[in-house]
Image 1 (tube, rainbow, N blue to C red):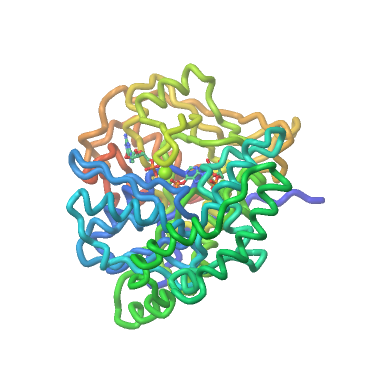
Image 2: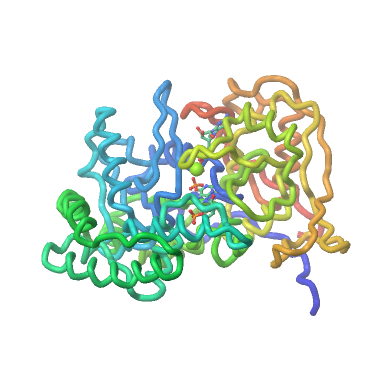
Length: 451
Ligand code: GDP
Ligand code: IMO
Ligand code: MG
């Protein structure tokens, strides 16, 4: 078999309209998507989540107030922005209502802005119990999931036994559907995992109240998006997780159960990805991963501990310490390529401010052979080849223009754009909304000879 040749990626596809855009994670999640979506919502009329579920934790910091969104799109803070939860999302009604109540407690009564697709699948206590049972079974099967029932719910969707929002909010059919699904799931819980069964009547009791509350928000979200498009509205799509957790393109089986990249947008909304003019891929200036699975550029624990401390690298959903590593250009190029990314947003540059040396993985040795392609197998030995950069050793947190950044930081960013073959549109230098450097024009990669 001939290895694929390296292809230089083109940058912005000028032919697509730029009114609608999409934000996706380019790594293993937690790249700072929430912050960037919040910032870009200023120019959007509609913000849409299209895959994943309450496994996501998207943080938005507004002055001293921190918001963490799991199911609600990160555009919710802007009044009058429609926030759509698309059909590709798996919705735990208990988690969604807890989130809505949390917003109410903070004085944000934006529930009317939320629209839930009638085709989205519902996460029930059976799914979370199965997720937990599978994860605690031990052995090689542990993924390190968020235990939010995501895999089991998508399994039911693919097996065509899941409950969708339209049925969930139908007062006539819910009890029967829960009894039927409960029978199937309890068999699995008891026989396969030796767990106690879950009483469908108890589930009905709790969940029918959730259905009552959510009913008015459930609609044909696909029709809504097309109607908004026809009216000239700007739609911002918000990916969850990151490219390397994509079920098809990620580090399978150590992935989540959806298409986390731009590839998930069409099926997760019923809105053609061809209508989306701009795909922004978010990457940290380094890398993190939560849960099990390969992470070639992972640091030794001592260095990781320092970065974790400075970067606050603890899960926004589970609180787990995140594994930390250097930026990985091999993984990044792949994510940009299959995700059709127009430009990158580099976040958390400030977290590197104190480092004397910054490393970047530029290629791999896979089972002894040099390559710049990410391997399919999670079993092979991957040794990253690093390039080293001197740190800038000064604060970037007050920088608001490219020229404000220290020269060494600018060199680092230029290298990232060149090596990834993709422009940089925004640099983030702190968690607060205002800590942003917008690059206009974008920092384009240096043209490759022959281009
Ligand atoms: P998401 O899942 O991609 O939305 O990212 P998370 O919210 O899980 O994790 C990103 C974390 O980094 C959050 O705590 C953010 O507040 C924080 N953050 C985002 N951008 C920056 C940045 O540029 N600098 C710093 N120091 N923190 C940031
Ligand atoms: P955001 O949107 C980081 C990881 C889990 C685990 C794997 C499968 O905040 O970037 P799952 O519960 O989805 O079945 O777990 O995926 N994972 C995330 N890691 N950020 C996320 O979301 C994640 N969502 C899931 O840690 O390794
Ligand atoms: Mg997160």
